[in-house]
Length: 255
Image (cartoon, rainbow, N blue to C red):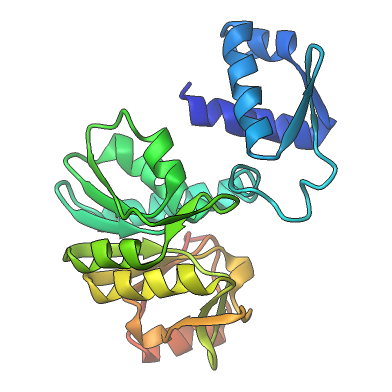
């Protein structure tokens, strides 16, 4: 089990029990207690837990402004479904630009094992940290750190993105609306995704079904700028018809 998988499991346990014990986690994951203490130390630095004697407790505020690692454990099966649907669209040797969303990270974990010789340009600090042993080429955009989002933004990140042309841009969003298009909650992140889309031959949106008919604070893209939308369940007939008319390929699990 990789370190990021172990951390996800620890966070899931924290949300169930509100506290964890080092000795129990070490036995469960078959690792040393020192390894678990390092995991908990990282989670404390990210604001998710407070360590105590023998373990850690979930911070009371963790459900308010959730750090990346906490968000990454939500709707995990839906994200994995989307990742599996993406797989046939990515070939060995492809070049990609990716955002800092937890949905895209789940897809990259699958691509890491199922594809060869990928080049990934990303503003995600999580990808840089957790996939640092990968055989693929990972390029950081650089830029200013947004700690809670574990992402890099700003002029330096934008300049890096504009230096490359790639096969596909992969990102998520906060909302999809037939009238408002694709929206997000953060302006710097939205701006970077716009530049990623401009530099890519295909733009692939990874979005769970809860995002349909939602509108975020910031306009990111028009739907016509998207090549594919991948989601975890069949949308309404109205959405299917609308996307067909927009010449957007919609992928979802067959019943």
